[in-house]
Image (spheres, rainbow, N blue to C red):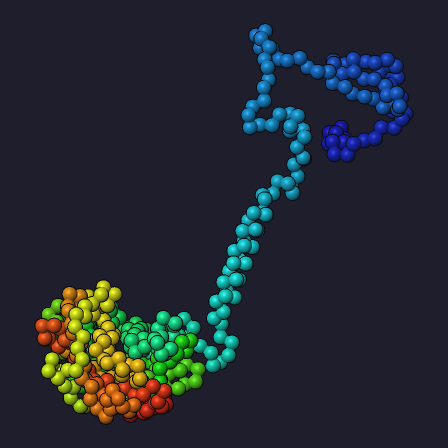
Length: 418
């Protein structure tokens, strides 16, 4: 009996006509009322019709209770009109999530196609983001720079300040990549503990050709010993696509105590940090041993006064950035030279620092093989000093006629000497 009832609950049993007639005979021909359920014979067939009588509203202690639907719950009529609960319609609505994911992927694909940084040819940019890397037995640092539109001047070529900024950036990144940066700017951990910083004393730059907008330049830099208490840093700037040498530069650096502002010997601890990174090579630029003359009001032909640092000219040590001195030196260069010639060589000697409240003046004297009316090469002497007379930078520049052929080229990074 139990098995039959369970089976019939899933599989309805179809009654035969004979069984239906026998049941009708037992129940009688007329209608029968069994506890509110009326059984009537069907007119069209022998099957039975079942009809439930409506029930009266319930009463509690003689009081009729009115059943009102509760807000938030469907009524019986509404519930009966809902679709049947199945596995499919009970799943969460994934359409919104799929739409959002599709939008994100389409946006990412669009940005990827717009960036288009992937190298397609071997001669294309290897270092697309300009991060730089160590090459040549771990002694040379290489970094690429793209010449931006805001880095070119009236001649449609990169300015000398742009090139100097590239040199300074690669020097700092070299120290960082070699693991020589402490919590200072360009200082090793040992230098930071002893309050020491690097300061440049001399810089020589030779420009064979200036890059133009859109060119990608490759800057190689390395360090060597300079005497007992100095360090020499060299740079070689070339066109990353053709390999043409564009700029060569060499500089000498010494240590200074940032608290006393006095020069310091290299401590043995610091020497042990930096000497493994020294390359035994000759300077990339032949040293110009000619003495830089000191100009004054009587010997200078052109003077520009009232130069003051801006906040953006200061470095992390609250002193004027070394590259800014180059721009100030050129402030007093005659306009006729700047329009007809281009700077091809520069030698600078840094004498002292310059602070945010300093007021300076730039002095220039034209000398050498040419003059303002001659289209040959021109040499100028420079002095940048405080208005009260203290020297900041002495300099000498050489200028060649524009579009002239470059002089003195170097083919590649020098190999380490034996």
